[in-house]
Length: 237
Image (cartoon, rainbow, N blue to C red; front, side):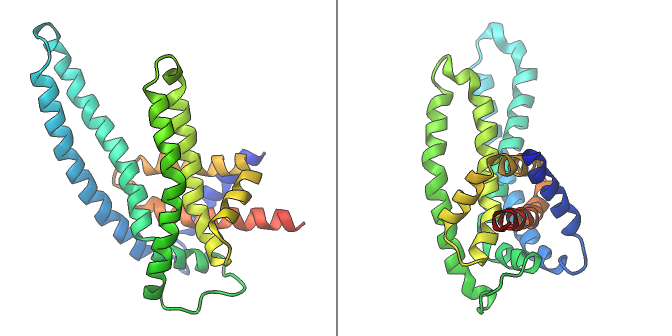
Protein backbone atom coordinates (compact mmCIF):
# COMPACT_ATOMS: atom_id res chain seq x y z
CA UNK A 1 0.00 0.00 0.00
CA UNK A 2 1.42 3.38 -1.06
CA UNK A 3 0.42 5.13 2.17
CA UNK A 4 2.21 2.45 4.16
CA UNK A 5 5.50 3.07 2.34
CA UNK A 6 5.69 6.59 3.74
CA UNK A 7 4.76 5.45 7.25
CA UNK A 8 7.28 2.60 7.08
CA UNK A 9 10.10 4.95 6.04
CA UNK A 10 9.33 7.33 8.89
CA UNK A 11 9.67 4.56 11.49
CA UNK A 12 12.72 3.12 9.73
CA UNK A 13 14.21 6.60 9.99
CA UNK A 14 13.32 6.66 13.69
CA UNK A 15 15.25 3.45 14.37
CA UNK A 16 18.16 4.36 12.07
CA UNK A 17 18.67 7.80 13.65
CA UNK A 18 20.18 6.25 16.77
CA UNK A 19 22.63 3.93 15.01
CA UNK A 20 26.32 4.66 15.81
CA UNK A 21 27.24 5.58 12.22
CA UNK A 22 24.46 8.18 12.02
CA UNK A 23 24.21 9.43 15.61
CA UNK A 24 27.10 11.98 15.46
CA UNK A 25 25.34 13.82 12.61
CA UNK A 26 22.10 13.94 14.60
CA UNK A 27 23.53 15.74 17.64
CA UNK A 28 24.04 19.18 16.10
CA UNK A 29 20.62 19.56 14.39
CA UNK A 30 18.96 18.11 17.51
CA UNK A 31 20.74 20.71 19.66
CA UNK A 32 19.72 23.53 17.30
CA UNK A 33 16.12 22.26 17.33
CA UNK A 34 16.08 22.06 21.12
CA UNK A 35 17.26 25.66 21.57
CA UNK A 36 14.82 27.06 18.98
CA UNK A 37 11.83 25.08 20.29
CA UNK A 38 12.43 25.88 23.98
CA UNK A 39 12.91 29.58 23.19
CA UNK A 40 9.82 29.54 20.97
CA UNK A 41 7.63 27.84 23.57
CA UNK A 42 8.81 30.24 26.27
CA UNK A 43 7.87 33.17 24.02
CA UNK A 44 4.59 31.50 23.07
CA UNK A 45 3.63 30.93 26.71
CA UNK A 46 3.97 34.64 27.45
CA UNK A 47 1.59 35.50 24.59
CA UNK A 48 -0.88 32.79 25.58
CA UNK A 49 -0.82 34.08 29.16
CA UNK A 50 -1.56 37.63 28.00
CA UNK A 51 -4.33 36.39 25.69
CA UNK A 52 -5.98 34.25 28.37
CA UNK A 53 -5.90 37.15 30.86
CA UNK A 54 -7.48 39.45 28.27
CA UNK A 55 -10.23 36.99 27.35
CA UNK A 56 -11.05 36.09 30.94
CA UNK A 57 -11.25 39.75 31.98
CA UNK A 58 -13.66 40.45 29.10
CA UNK A 59 -15.99 37.51 29.67
CA UNK A 60 -19.57 38.53 30.42
CA UNK A 61 -20.60 37.87 34.01
CA UNK A 62 -22.86 34.98 33.06
CA UNK A 63 -19.97 33.23 31.27
CA UNK A 64 -17.32 33.48 33.99
CA UNK A 65 -17.82 29.79 34.70
CA UNK A 66 -16.06 29.12 31.36
CA UNK A 67 -12.74 30.33 32.79
CA UNK A 68 -11.83 26.88 34.13
CA UNK A 69 -12.23 25.44 30.60
CA UNK A 70 -11.02 28.33 28.45
CA UNK A 71 -7.61 28.86 30.04
CA UNK A 72 -6.43 25.20 29.87
CA UNK A 73 -7.67 24.95 26.26
CA UNK A 74 -5.74 28.08 25.28
CA UNK A 75 -2.55 26.74 26.84
CA UNK A 76 -3.04 23.34 25.21
CA UNK A 77 -3.62 24.92 21.80
CA UNK A 78 -0.63 27.18 22.31
CA UNK A 79 1.63 24.25 23.20
CA UNK A 80 0.55 22.11 20.23
CA UNK A 81 0.61 24.90 17.63
CA UNK A 82 3.81 26.39 19.02
CA UNK A 83 5.57 23.03 19.13
CA UNK A 84 4.66 22.36 15.51
CA UNK A 85 5.57 25.84 14.22
CA UNK A 86 8.85 26.14 16.09
CA UNK A 87 9.73 22.56 15.17
CA UNK A 88 9.45 23.59 11.53
CA UNK A 89 11.47 26.76 12.22
CA UNK A 90 14.16 24.65 13.88
CA UNK A 91 14.35 22.50 10.74
CA UNK A 92 14.85 25.62 8.62
CA UNK A 93 17.56 27.04 10.91
CA UNK A 94 19.35 23.70 11.10
CA UNK A 95 19.06 22.96 7.39
CA UNK A 96 22.86 22.91 6.67
CA UNK A 97 23.36 20.21 9.32
CA UNK A 98 20.29 18.29 8.17
CA UNK A 99 21.61 18.27 4.60
CA UNK A 100 24.82 16.66 5.83
CA UNK A 101 22.79 14.08 7.76
CA UNK A 102 20.91 13.20 4.57
CA UNK A 103 24.21 12.66 2.75
CA UNK A 104 25.35 10.21 5.44
CA UNK A 105 22.16 8.21 5.11
CA UNK A 106 22.13 8.04 1.30
CA UNK A 107 25.44 9.26 -0.20
CA UNK A 108 24.85 10.77 -3.67
CA UNK A 109 27.08 9.77 -6.58
CA UNK A 110 28.54 13.29 -6.68
CA UNK A 111 28.45 14.62 -3.11
CA UNK A 112 29.11 18.36 -2.51
CA UNK A 113 32.82 19.09 -2.06
CA UNK A 114 32.37 21.96 0.36
CA UNK A 115 32.71 22.40 4.12
CA UNK A 116 29.44 22.50 6.07
CA UNK A 117 29.72 26.26 6.68
CA UNK A 118 29.88 26.83 2.92
CA UNK A 119 26.51 25.10 2.65
CA UNK A 120 24.74 27.63 4.89
CA UNK A 121 23.88 30.24 2.22
CA UNK A 122 22.68 27.71 -0.42
CA UNK A 123 20.68 25.84 2.22
CA UNK A 124 18.94 29.00 3.45
CA UNK A 125 18.20 30.01 -0.15
CA UNK A 126 16.57 26.62 -0.68
CA UNK A 127 14.52 27.08 2.49
CA UNK A 128 13.29 30.46 1.25
CA UNK A 129 12.18 28.73 -1.96
CA UNK A 130 10.13 26.28 0.11
CA UNK A 131 8.57 29.13 2.08
CA UNK A 132 7.60 30.83 -1.19
CA UNK A 133 5.79 27.61 -2.11
CA UNK A 134 4.08 27.10 1.24
CA UNK A 135 2.98 30.61 2.24
CA UNK A 136 0.39 31.32 -0.51
CA UNK A 137 -1.23 27.94 0.18
CA UNK A 138 -1.18 28.65 3.90
CA UNK A 139 -2.88 32.01 3.31
CA UNK A 140 -5.57 30.36 1.17
CA UNK A 141 -6.19 27.79 3.89
CA UNK A 142 -6.51 30.54 6.50
CA UNK A 143 -9.14 32.25 4.34
CA UNK A 144 -11.06 28.99 3.92
CA UNK A 145 -10.96 28.47 7.69
CA UNK A 146 -12.99 31.63 8.36
CA UNK A 147 -15.63 31.14 5.66
CA UNK A 148 -18.88 29.87 7.22
CA UNK A 149 -20.07 26.38 6.19
CA UNK A 150 -16.90 25.68 4.19
CA UNK A 151 -14.77 25.94 7.34
CA UNK A 152 -16.40 22.76 8.63
CA UNK A 153 -13.82 20.79 6.62
CA UNK A 154 -10.91 23.07 7.55
CA UNK A 155 -9.50 20.70 10.24
CA UNK A 156 -9.08 17.98 7.59
CA UNK A 157 -7.57 20.49 5.18
CA UNK A 158 -5.11 21.65 7.85
CA UNK A 159 -4.11 18.06 8.58
CA UNK A 160 -3.60 17.30 4.90
CA UNK A 161 -1.70 20.52 4.29
CA UNK A 162 0.52 19.94 7.32
CA UNK A 163 1.32 16.41 6.14
CA UNK A 164 2.14 17.60 2.62
CA UNK A 165 4.30 20.47 3.90
CA UNK A 166 6.27 18.13 6.16
CA UNK A 167 6.86 15.72 3.28
CA UNK A 168 8.09 18.52 1.02
CA UNK A 169 10.26 19.98 3.77
CA UNK A 170 12.08 16.82 4.78
CA UNK A 171 12.23 14.89 1.50
CA UNK A 172 13.85 17.84 -0.28
CA UNK A 173 17.23 17.35 1.41
CA UNK A 174 17.77 14.16 -0.55
CA UNK A 175 16.82 15.82 -3.84
CA UNK A 176 19.11 18.76 -3.12
CA UNK A 177 22.03 16.41 -2.47
CA UNK A 178 21.37 14.81 -5.84
CA UNK A 179 21.89 18.20 -7.46
CA UNK A 180 18.24 18.50 -8.55
CA UNK A 181 16.08 21.59 -8.07
CA UNK A 182 13.10 22.04 -5.77
CA UNK A 183 10.64 21.37 -8.60
CA UNK A 184 12.06 17.85 -8.83
CA UNK A 185 11.05 17.20 -5.23
CA UNK A 186 7.51 18.41 -5.90
CA UNK A 187 7.26 16.35 -9.08
CA UNK A 188 8.44 13.15 -7.41
CA UNK A 189 6.16 13.57 -4.39
CA UNK A 190 3.15 14.38 -6.58
CA UNK A 191 3.76 11.14 -8.49
CA UNK A 192 3.67 9.27 -5.17
CA UNK A 193 1.26 11.49 -3.22
CA UNK A 194 -0.08 8.76 -0.92
CA UNK A 195 3.42 7.75 0.21
CA UNK A 196 4.31 11.40 0.75
CA UNK A 197 1.18 12.01 2.84
CA UNK A 198 1.75 8.87 4.93
CA UNK A 199 5.26 10.06 5.76
CA UNK A 200 4.14 13.64 6.30
CA UNK A 201 1.31 12.62 8.61
CA UNK A 202 3.72 10.78 10.92
CA UNK A 203 6.06 13.78 10.90
CA UNK A 204 3.21 16.20 11.65
CA UNK A 205 2.11 14.16 14.67
CA UNK A 206 5.71 13.97 15.89
CA UNK A 207 6.20 17.71 15.45
CA UNK A 208 3.20 18.41 17.68
CA UNK A 209 4.68 16.59 20.71
CA UNK A 210 6.28 19.28 22.90
CA UNK A 211 9.99 18.93 23.78
CA UNK A 212 10.23 15.53 22.10
CA UNK A 213 9.83 17.24 18.72
CA UNK A 214 13.41 18.50 18.79
CA UNK A 215 14.37 14.97 17.73
CA UNK A 216 11.77 14.79 14.97
CA UNK A 217 13.67 16.98 12.48
CA UNK A 218 16.67 14.57 12.28
CA UNK A 219 14.33 11.56 12.30
CA UNK A 220 12.26 13.07 9.48
CA UNK A 221 15.37 13.84 7.42
CA UNK A 222 16.54 10.24 7.71
CA UNK A 223 13.06 8.90 6.94
CA UNK A 224 12.52 11.37 4.09
CA UNK A 225 15.87 10.47 2.58
CA UNK A 226 15.03 6.77 2.71
CA UNK A 227 11.61 7.47 1.17
CA UNK A 228 13.11 9.43 -1.73
CA UNK A 229 15.67 6.67 -2.28
CA UNK A 230 12.82 4.17 -2.56
CA UNK A 231 10.83 6.42 -4.89
CA UNK A 232 13.78 7.01 -7.20
CA UNK A 233 14.52 3.28 -7.20
CA UNK A 234 10.93 2.52 -8.20
CA UNK A 235 11.11 5.05 -11.02
CA UNK A 236 14.24 3.45 -12.44
CA UNK A 237 12.76 -0.06 -12.57
